[in-house]
Image (cartoon, rainbow, N blue to C red; front, top):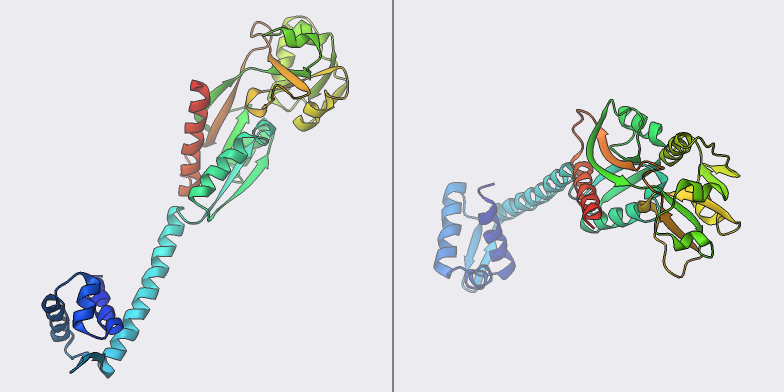
Length: 300
């Protein structure tokens, strides 16, 4: 490694064809560059240049040396590339288990931001319910999990917790739009489109209904939050989602309002990893980015 600078200077002389021109290219004086070359030749044990009246030319020993220099450069570039791969800066693969609510807006934005800085990194996004996500971490199928209301948390090392209030979705023409916060009883007067029992939103709704002595009777039950979102535009019905999965504008056909915490307790969106696991660098850095993004949401 200590010869790298000298090799660069030798290559500069070869390309320029003279000490004077090479000195200009390398920001050295001609005498200083000549001394560096002579010092190397003495240590190397052989002259490597033919000194001609009009410049410098490699001799056979110099040709062999230049072949070695080029091989050294190629090997060094390969090693540097491998180190970059190991560090996750240039390559790497990140697998994340997530709730459906993260798919429409949050994760596409975060993945695109990360890949803008690290375009060689690839992703696997595994849609999981709250129990499946924890199993993914335990089996090393996913590096990170971002899920709403995980079940057990035994092997779940929480990196960040973002509170999320359950929101009701409905057609913008419904009277519900006039209320800033809804009571559960307001929604139970409508036909219900609910997520299946495996999902955290349904779990919290069931808790709220039980507290009020009510029973949830869905007209449509589904594992797809996209279906919930679109179905309420087709019939006089109410669906449910958490805010991170919503991006409804004033001109959209649907509106949403939060449910009162008096009826339905807020849940937590948890970012986590397998407890005790040392993540690959790329996954660890993406986790740090997600923490910062979730913190910004909490502050906002």
